[in-house]
Image (tube, rainbow, N blue to C red; front, side):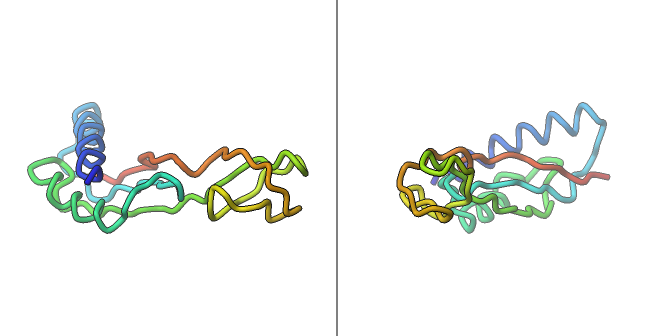
Length: 113
């Protein structure tokens, strides 16, 4: 389960930010997750509760924001949202698509006290 290592990476970022801004407690973290990122959200939520123990983000709420898959269609020169990497262009039906987004995962923001 790579979600555990994802949470460990997030924890490192959160601890660094807490030190830099002299924050004692993080109460909420919003993470953007692309459709093609390969992240199992229930596993990430489970790992979150374990990995954040003893950190400034212990008991913080994890909010996961879905980002759509995006691709550039070479047939109609349009950037489109796609549900599957092999899906045809929803605009023209063409099959020459190059994914341009949806594989990212990043911390959007956090709340602290």
